[in-house]
Image (cartoon, rainbow over all chains, first blue to last red; front, side, top):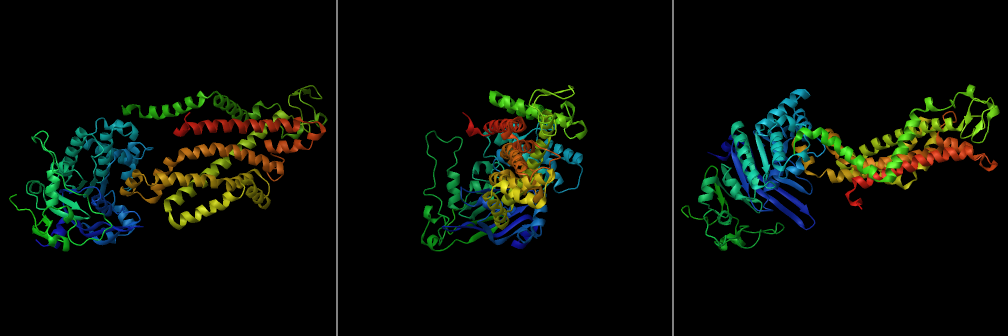
Length: 332
Length: 300
């Protein structure tokens, strides 16, 4: 299958996205050539450490990059239309309807002075001409779907009266109001405690499966993604360095960075006192213009070629790719 | 926490604020005075001993009587004396209070409305719109409000409505600056970004989501500005460019009495002046207390 075929099949397709920030110190290339494909109903985990550009990728897709940031290059297809070529009014009508975002901190994303019901009714009426009563019924239905107990009462509640998990469920319910084609979730469970995190993960997975909504799950936590995503893309220094179905990626990572990330996750059954492997060094200064592989300075396998030439994308089959001159062996 | 108490809790938050307001004995006293003043102004036509606008009920023979005198025909007692037309000062003050409060309320609400919209738009639009609005605000704030009002009234002429307009023009800039400061903080909060993500139009983002979150500091300013507006109206009337003589406010009454101050007829000036001072003082005390309540750093 050629790249263009895949692009047509995908609900969301990002090509060569570059989002740069002009700062006083120089240009920060937060996202520097990202390609992504998200099929209908697929859950894709976008994993990377702080500053790898994963959140900026999400914001770029939503069209929320603020100055001094700018999408300098690339295409973002939602269905057949390029989001970067749309007018602000067209974008507005897509946001919330076909493309929804769930934020990291549910404490912050709900308007503190409006009741849950009011916010949800607003979200409905922003895109559809329906009566208040009908919008309210839709809101209620959405709350029921995300498994909120006593939803009728929650509609009258204010955000500060709800727990963190409950608020995140409300955010998810709002995102689902218009049955979007794609949901982008930016670390939506990071601010929650672990048990609630588990529940939310389970619910989101169920809801996306039910409505065959594609989900882009942005996180730094490989363990979360392992239990959730169909496919994982690993981001490093503004690029996707490896992408593969979740199981294959976890069991047989090809890029040394992915292998490093996996080695850094504690496992059940690990001997007590055994050290976790860590990746030496720290992520590169985004201001530096680099030659060669961005991971080379931290990579144990790096050779002269890695330092002088940027690795090209190797893609043996659709949905599987890596950027490395010397990938780990398949049987490792 | 049960959401069934949601409505109740919102109410109880207001009640909590009220309780904390009354915890200060000073504020409680001022609040009580204010309540009485407002009540007296509202009920003036029914509780005033005389209709001060009805010339037929005035008796020129009763003019300039000191406080406590009996009227010529012995039908009533002038507790606060009479003016040069034989008008009962108590009645005149009660009716004057109506005008003063009316002007104060309208001028404050008008300035709040205009200033808030300007400030929010500036913060929301950024760029040259922001710069343009805020330079007007800067210029406005560089000139004393009373001076602007004076110039405007010289052009517009007398009248209660014109005083209100002049006071709005002189006062909106304070609200605009505070609203902008507040909106600059709120506009970058995540819930505003979420509002963009939900595909809300700019109007809805601004009025429905940004505005309510910017209101608390503006309400504090409104209480202070209200007292200022009443004082400014009095000053304008005193200077002779404010309300017309046919609708005397407290400031107008004070100004009328000023002519007789040196001839020993102190009551003509003193009582309306005192009424004015009491209104402004009690409003300032309540406003200060309210500011302490909503400002967590003001806690002592």
